[in-house]
Length: 482
Picture (cartoon, helix red, strand yellow):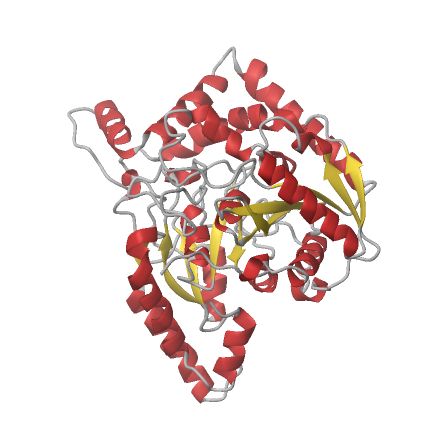
């Protein structure tokens, strides 16, 4: 798939029309999505209508932005006016939002062409996109394997060239982990940099929207379009948004990169370890100084997350009561209607997390579990703070393994949770994190390198990612999907 800048130039030069580019994306979806199943719905009419408006602007010689006419996939937990938003859950099978999320409104205003809503683990709870209430998405590199999750639909759509870029959400690794497994670029921004208004909440203190792309520049362009203060989001940061493409430099001279020692221990696939270490060695050749950094409380991120996130989820998901929106199971009493609807509408993983969260917030257990987990969260942030006193960017593997077979971990939730071992601490600390392709295993499955920055220092992540990308060829490799 051609890059944003190349497509923009073709549009400006009138070599191709936005409608032609959109039709090409829709034809690609039609050709491969029956195998990949990235999308929950394809919005062809809406896409062509948007593309026609872009072409009308070009015909009048009006200036267009970089994203005008660019096909994009939107994770189906972002509200879109007049277009179904299901969150991958049967409980919202008939929900059509009466309002637009801030990020999708920004993309609309920029003239971006939404070609469809992408599949996800139900309410963004999962690491494989097998928890969707509708269908399982496949990894374009090997259709028998998972694309990661929860934003697996967006990652797979970009990897399969069904759209140029896509949006996902990341609560504990849900952009970076599928980006790693699908061999694309994925970024979770600093908490509060991108508005969460219109993002259906899973865990409000952790959720963040971010881009998927085939290359670093496209990710930088998309982040620049969606970032910024929003008065509708009380957690939004009021800070100037730079042009992230200005950080795209081929050299790392003057940068110090810290390798998180604790991420190279038990549970890490030997091939992943070897490949990531080779990528880190390569960063030295680009001018970076590389040192080891210890984050001793890093390993406590997983247990802390699986108390904090389900606790917030149990509160956020209480709104699905069959009264205001979503499906309704008829019953004789109000309580029966609640319980029947939630029993039918929610899948097993969502029910599991609601029960865990309700338990940890209950009287007698709040201090023992939830409060303690929040204290651990503070300690993890302190470890990162100490690390950033010595280095500009931290690095580690994105995922402990490459893509696993569909069904391999569904009966073992704990094993599934371990997929986010290295990404979760970044969310707990509210920091920006990025996954970039850095190689392949023996089965030709992608491996991701995770870059972690200090608060609002996405620019340094883009600098490291771009320099690495330009000096290697991993991002140009395409899956063997016909």
